Length: 176
Image (cartoon, rainbow, N blue to C red; front, side):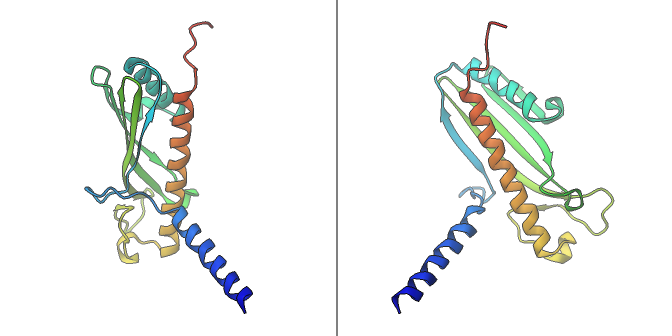
């Protein structure tokens, strides 16, 4: 009798853990999906800023199209980009990334996630990924919405991991 109950409990825990895995962080003030973090790095603000610019140039096909604000004096870079959460027919999601730099640390903020649809799609209206739009609003099934959201969250998690790895590396070699 104890064995079936234990198996059921383990199955429920596994299901709960899996469903929480792709649950995005929600900012308590803005109620928007917001991936953010402060990372301590033993470098000066200007060095971190330059590394942030370099990372953007590597991480995105055209950093000039992504970067909206560059303010070295205040240690701030803001960019907007579009990502494909899944195969082409799913559409595109736009997002904003902000990088802030101070001596010994930097902060990343990724927010403003909006599904844009695909070019020429009839009946399509952009929707924030925090929303649970009905099929009528976004012209997409619940399964399609879930694929958009999960694909977007996975790409953002990978992007943040890449940022952290790049910023921690000593890739600013003066000897070439």
